[in-house]
Length: 367
Image 1 (cartoon, one colour):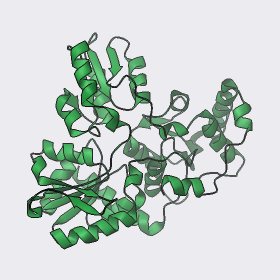
Image 2 (tube, one colour):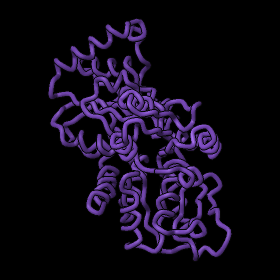
Image 3 (cartoon, one colour):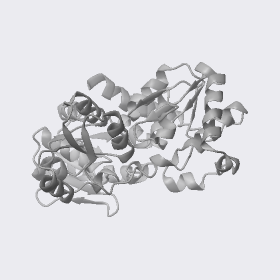
Image 4 (cartoon, one colour):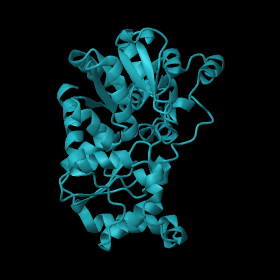
């Protein structure tokens, strides 16, 4: 479901009473309901969420970590504080008796929305005319359930930023080429690290329905979907050049959703988990500029006062769709459970879920 579909869907607006409550009143009510529901409630909170939400999370982590945590809990209600595709994955991995709720249905992901199933099926048909049966599809977990199912149906798999290298290596044992969805930057950075030259990477443009490549298509090993993360693409070479002038001793640590040029000019690059662990292991007094989402960067800064930490882009703002989930929406979701009037339930169709599970399981088997 893309953002437009979510807006059209009649999920209702946040009742005005929540805007009239004080923060202390809302915090007290959330605590009260959590205590009342006990083990029947599980609240996963993504690393990019606001502190006012993370305060009440039963688990924090990246999207797949949280979906797996949801699958391991016996809670009847899972209130997923993240974005739509994450809640979909949680619904896929949990059992039918468990209810997955997204506090605000407007919490989507621009990257996931850059590859819808209709575009992808059309692209695959056209690419098969060029490359035949030589391709295997891989999708970043930051994608819709339908795209995960598309990959599972064709023998492909999902990947995370932590295991992308292993999964791309595995994919090349299965087929001569891979189609990497929906983030071109993670795909390019991963393939390049594994020794695939840029000259052997092409880009599929879903807007023009064209393969962007100069040369003989038979040389192409990686087809990158033309999608990106709106947050990580805002870190630039200009940011790095400015930092190298102002703070030459400061190390630059970025997420592989950043552009290839930015990753190449940085000192280190890795997943959210890698970024967090790198800072945790760093010496007191060390200096770091981090290129990832601002809520997480601010939290890392608060947790490590013994180190000098800044955002690589000083004008960076948090992920706007992640910030849709706030304390009022969290409380609204919890009170709806308390009142037996569940709102914003996320349900993935059974046939889509089964094929998506195939893609997820392949990752868990080979990563």
